[in-house]
Length: 265
Length: 265
Image (cartoon, rainbow over all chains, first blue to last red; front, top):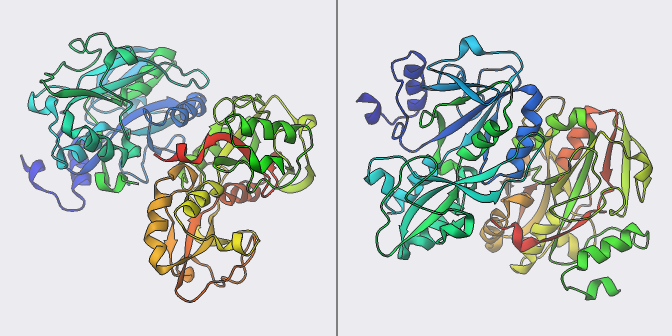
């Protein structure tokens, strides 16, 4: 596939163009390696302050990469010129917290009072971990990363509240310190782990039954390590049932022009 | 002075109590060493989203440590139980961008629509630099740190816009790398420098004429190093002339319960 070969500057823009034209409608995992991908939450302006404050108060789970101007579909910073309504392969439309529709572009749903929040994604820190020589088990097992609801309460803000959702990666004992330092260096994509080793301590009963994604093998000598997950803000939004909300469909992310390395502080 | 001797837990709360009682009305520099101090901006709710977005878009200059709930005078996180209206030694009241009053408490100005923003302060990273063996020239010369308006435009948000204000510290050439790494580790209090070495490159014509604070000596073999400054959001707020705004008076900060070391990522 041509996409996987080209890596020159402008590459993400070319891929977004193919997404805009409906040529690509698949999950974006592995596309434009080295470039950050982002979660999307679109809300009416009346919810924007509460959501931005929720993100500020829970920055590990909700690292904001860009907020659009109200009503604007065009991004300026992480993917200049990208059209929020067309440049993501698949979207979800929610009304009062209920999923109404999944579609490949949302131009007909656009309104002048919408604000778009682009949120850092663990794909970025995974690429850093892989470069550091750490295996991502869910990649090896060709499935989604396992995600779990925890008993760690997010700090509420206005109408938004909920518990933190975490993703889990089994890490060999001798690589745990490296996994911490590598991810601590990228706070804009969730940063250092929130917990190491004891699922019960954060309210997770059974690692073999994740709340989202798929269970993965944990081998002898490996430790389960938990990172704040970008599903947290989506879960909080769904819980609070705003009358209208749009998000990306799981795994179908915005591909940005930002290199993962540029997210290091 | 008793304040300088006591360092046990609860120490900042005791000092805030003396501030609340009007016993302390002086600048807070050097009080409760090791504890972070914070800038204050209080705005009516109608400006809160724009200001929070301005801070999010210009996080190096405006690192938010806490945002109060609308109408609440009580902090929950960085100084639990602190009363925003009484626990800072000196306040400034602005109307339409014009300074109206300076006073030691603002209870009578409080309104149910006010939101308080507490913003990280360079006192915290200076304490880290001093611990790393780097002289703070403005301390040695017993004056304020020199601050300069730059030609670096902040990313605007709603009604708020303006250029970045920076503080400058002369650093011996052989300590510049250390000054970068030490401050890069504390992104919640401005983080790494924004520029090293050439004032003209960021629009500063004359280091001997700072826009705020006092000029300091730059010795042979020293390099001027520039950090984003917490005066930036205040300058942006003053420029946009909101009908009402309160801030701390310069140098009269909120003393928090947070240790500077806890601000390291």
